[in-house]
Image (cartoon, rainbow, N blue to C red; front, side):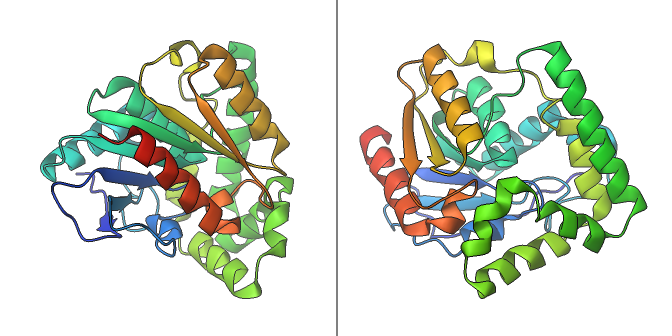
Length: 265
């Protein structure tokens, strides 16, 4: 049986819109806990499979994107939440997009530094080989060796400007993971394994893309997504790289809640 851990960041009130927050690879829902949320909304954080307090040692098939989305939908149904908005960072953004494109109960999608996948089979095959290599590394080396390698990726270079205490919190979150869970996430729902959602971006579901000014790769992805659907909104945040909600939390919260005020029903 697969269990998904969840936590409310604001007291639940049935008459308020619910915002579901999904973290990135090597993270947990706690990455959103320190943000200053408005009491106008219900904020719910979920640990994705293989991370935090959610199930880790389950069949690899449970890590496939389709299975993950189905289980998350079941969870919110059990919580008796009829309509909701999705906010996802990086890997969590890919999950949010997959979920939001198929679930009519999703009223809007906010993606932070996230991608709809890779358009061509050749790109997917290359990424699968790369992700599988990382997964094998997780299963054959110590977790500390992998975390040391992961945090030095150019994608996270801007995080070195964060206070030492914040960097220590991020590292502790990464070190709290199980290698098997991280490896299965790469093997089964990495960017290469997931379906390409580029052809489905012409959705009527409102969508906001948030990127950092120093994250040129995901800025370009965001612009390419808007070419597919001009109604998609983009917000580029100054003084931030890949992880906007950690690097510029106040600006991030303001952007999300301003957008919600425009779109929440």
